[in-house]
Amino acid sequence: MKANDVYRKTMKFVWLKLALGGCAILFSIVFGMILLGIAALSKNDGMVGFFLMLWLGASAGGVGITQYYIGYLLKAGHIAVVTHFVKTGSLPEDQFAFGKQAVKEKFATAAAYFAVDRLVAGAVRQINGTLNIVGSFLEKVPGMESLVSFAKSFVNIALGNLDECCMAYTFYHAEQSSFKSAADGVVIYFQNWKSILKDALKTAVIAVTVSGVAWFFFMFGIFGVLGVLGVPGIMGLLVALVLTVMIMMIVKSSIMDSYTMVCMVCSYLRVAPTTEITFDLYDKLCRLSSKFKSLLQKAGEAGTR
Image (cartoon, rainbow, N blue to C red; front, side):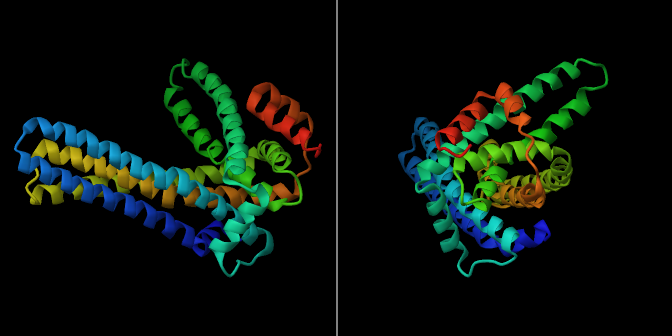
């Protein structure tokens, strides 16, 4: 099953993420207009800077809550539905209810999901840090700077979805401990890194291209609208920049990150079920990452290894 088809048929999660992000932006715009009105009525230039900082803080908080907490749980449900679709070839009738129930049955609480995901993400950062040390050494070789910089970005995108792949593997093997599945998932990922990273390259090119075009469109579009509304040049540019950053954060987390996640999970689940685990990789990854070692220890404490 093609990743594009899986993404298209599970777009309900993407629309909900966009709706939440849209609410955050609407709050930011309304709150900004209120503060602008108060500043205009007060006729105190000193208040403009204060209100601007207040607006920036409130806007960042609104986007952060919707995208990094509520959106985080939505992503977990999305992963559960994608995994079910890839595994069975069919979609649940109510995707949201299925995703919520799958996360609850597997992890019991949001805190339990966060605990497993943070361990996996921490292990990824540590392993990625080791790779970056090698890259930093190669950058000293004349003519290698650009190549290494691109390679680092490519590896970061691929490894950035490792936690989603491992979460998918925990849903795929619902019968065993989450820590066990996550640890196995990391090992399986690195055993199949060639095929998975090849798919990640295609996804990275699409994500970077679309993000670049969207950034240009939103930045100059918003700046043009503000100019028509009579907002001064420097102030208009600053507001346009802030709004563009907010919109792009939402577009990235809702559309691009979801697309990347689905592509990587589908690529991963094509090879994971048939992979025979090479157990010496556990020791090698433990030496590279204390977080992975902790994940493996928790799997042992659960009596699953």
